Structures are given as C-alpha cells and as structure tokens.
Image (cartoon, rainbow, N blue to C red; front, side):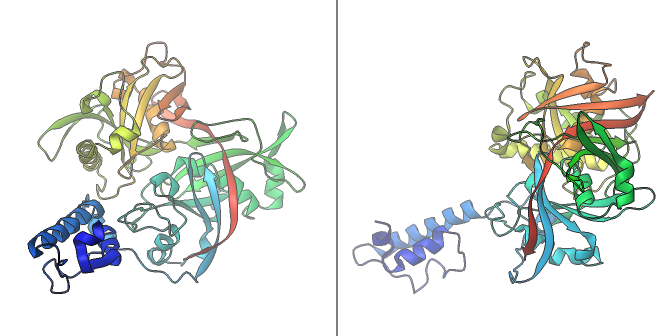
Length: 451
C-alpha cells in the first residue's frame, strides 16, 4: 500500500524518507512521478507529509548553543586503538585509561574519546557505535596517572556526551571513584613496599586502603577495598549489595576528605541556605545551593507541581514531560550562575528534586536527580554526598524534609528511584571533615578500544 501511493519512489526511497535521510530531492522534483492511478497533487502531498513526519521524529530540538556546536558525529577509521579496561563503578560504567596512552595535550583527547564512546549520536542517543550505552551514567571515562604529594594515584573523570561530542571534566563521579583504588592496585601504580604497608586483616580477609587525588575537584578520597591471593589482587567477591546493581560484591569504603567547596571553594557558595532563583521565563523558585563533593541545586518537588509525597515523580514521568525538563534545566543554569559557575557545562551543578520520606520507613528523605539533561535512575553518588550534607545543615530545603528523629545521627539514608544509599559525615562544628559512602565495583574487560 505504501509503495502504491508513492509509485516510482519504491521501497528504497520510502525507507530513506522514514529513516530521516534528508538529502532527498524536494517534494516537487521531476524525479518523483505520480502513480498512473493517482492524481499528481495527492502524491506530492503524501510525500510532503512523510518528509515532515520524518523531520519531526528524527530532529531533536537542541537545548543550547553548545549542543548545536558539538552534535556533529565524528567519523572514525575503526583501526586505531588504545588499551583500556571496561569497568563498573557503583551504578556507573565506562573506561579506565592510563594517562600515558592518551595525547599529552588534553585538547587532543577530543579526537579520540568521543569516537571511542560512540558520542555524537544526535538522532538515536544510544552510542551503539562505541563503548557508551546512551546515558550519562554509562558514558564515563577515568584517566589514571601516578600520584603526587602523598597520594597513591591521581585520576581525572571525563563525562562523554551522548547526543553531542562534548568531553566534560567539570566534576568528579563518585560512582566511578569506587574503581580507582582497585585499578591503581592492579595496574602497577602502587609499589610492593607500599602495598605491604597498607594491608590489614579483618574477618579472615585482607583489605587495602589507598589515598587518591581527584583532579576535577582537587580533593582527596581514601578507598578501602578487599584483596586476595598471592600476590594479592583486587577481589570483588563479597556479600554486599547496592541499589541498582544485581548481585552482591565486596564493599568499597569511600572517604571523601574535606569535601566541601569542591568546585566553588565554599559549602554554601552564595552564603545562603536558601536562595530565590529568577528564571528566564520570569518565574522564581527557591533552591538550596550546596557544594560538597560536587555542587547541587536542591529544590522542593512540590515547586515543580508534584505532591509532597512525591507520588508520580519517576524517571519515566520526567523523561516524557518536555516542559518539566526544560524548566529543570532553566533552574540548573540559574543555580550555576548564582554559584559563579559556567552554565554551559552540563555535568555540574546538577539539579535535584527533594521530598520527605512519606510512607517509606527505610529512608530519611527522597530525591530524583537530573544528570546531563536526563532523569537519573538512581542518584549520582557525589550528589548523594552533597544532599546528605545539606540534610544535616539546618535551614536548607533538604533539612526541612528530615524528621526530628532523623536529625543529628551522622548518617542520612537517601531514597532514590532504585532504592537507597547511606551517607555518613564526620563534622567538627559546621565544618565537614569527611563523608563516607559504600559502593561496589568490578572489572568487566581488559583489552584494546578501537576508534
């Protein structure tokens, strides 16, 4: 029936039109002839409608000028390679690469990493032609280098774009941080003498603690993880499980040392516990702007029209509400400006909707976070850390969600779309000396990445 209406267009051109191939002759081209049984005007109208539908389906509206400049997919030969590990860290996954296997100039990484990850997938956002998986949490890269100034290793997190080719190094990734200690241990960044000095026995198992340095935030993170064998190597086997990841593994204790002011230099970048943000559409919204681990813009879910219980607030609901996503991005950008940050950098700050525990007896408060324009199916770990600190800072919107019984315990259990996560903080008065979280991680593949 479709070929009958289109006549000489045939199935090949039908497939091209519906697939979004817009390099076609115009609808009134002499190459498009009407079927002998149909009036020409009807045929032309039909082709025009098909082209219009294809355009609407296949051309997403770019959210910013940065998107427009960067969404062109770069071709690759598929014959160039670099060695890497493919890993899971917490609820994220991506590549671990040695610094020496990338160009010395970070500006030249743009010629390698987007292609390796399959970025610039403007139409489909699936990254099928690379190592990414179409979401911000599965498009991560960490680059390792020898440690300095008492650190065993230093690392840089690179957030690869999905629809665009942007490489964003503005913030740390708490989930991928979990793999840094084990990777540094097994990749040879730690001397044998140092390994022996950091080993300890507990419960009939061996554990190691390494000190790492994150270059994105210039912060120190201590990582404690299980090792086994002779010589000892990282051992992911264990009985600890985290929300969002099937099965159980050995726990990794992450201690973020002096985590406040990771990007702005202050826990409360504006000096206020609540700010009123003026948005581009003329509206206003209250937000708590907090920078611990990574900066966050925390707003009440009720300010976005959701009930106090958070009923109906799910990643799927957010993803299908274009107007809501645009509003949240507007809030994120306004928060970035208020904190003195570049609003064009999509990775930080992140905007987070918070609401009370409600009927959930197993958590202290709940949240849904946005990450790189997408509703996160769990919670970015550094944002959980930031929210945990905000919840224990009296006067913030997050603190107002906490019950009296939840306050002052030192541990905040945060509910998110996939489950919950515990954030423990050590404070000295108003100063946060450290924040601890538990994650799991494992290496899934070692080899060469073609790009």
